[in-house]
Image 1 (tube, rainbow, N blue to C red):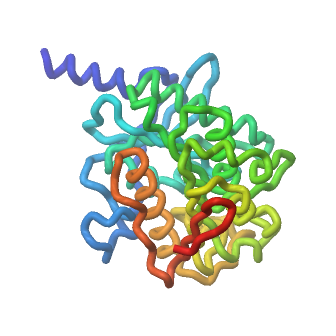
Image 2: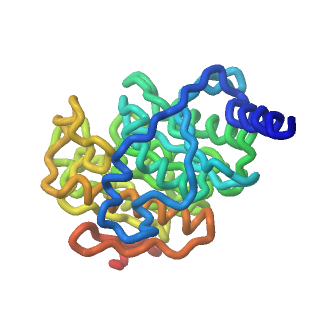
Length: 307
């Protein structure tokens, strides 16, 4: 009887605030990327078993689709990450990031696909809504919630952190400042309370202007970022090579990089996981990448220091 009650309790915990739920089958990107990596490498799978589901959450009268990744035995007050995909990118393109984080103790909610009509304000609001849902239904630590995103999602991860006080650290993966609302020139200094990692694709600007044009790319955010911001440049990489499947149909418009996509993805994932482990789990400082893969700069007191 006790075991049956425990199972019921677990199912209620997983589905609270949800109107539908679907179990996700693990992809193979993370496992394939981990081949040849040292045991315990942050770019690979961590020690904890992961439960993954896609669901429609119902919170404060609003519904959103999210893919939820969490440790099988997540304790109360776990740290959490809200992840915002790029414009019209499905959540499964970021599965390896979510699974790598969840296998190290994070509860990760990846916002579902959104249309080209979604505004920056709306996407930032969604990040805050998801964070509030995580606090209300998943018992995460409200002081240990990070926000991450790619492309438009990276831009609006920073916007969410500057507008809402719930986010304790931010990772923006090749953000672009396209659109009517500028975040790069709209108050990034207010992010000083939340450590920021900018991961940029060095040659993304050479592809279509809808991807990450030079006048609006990650470097523009770094120029306006608060002291202590870390910029990690993925050498010879384009705007989609950090995705789980960068050569999926329709992404060719952004494909111009000559770097190895696997290595780009490994470097970006290792940095993302390491940054959140550092700032939300009091882990070690972000590991320095190999010089052949990426370059790091740090913003400090209105000037840039190489690292």
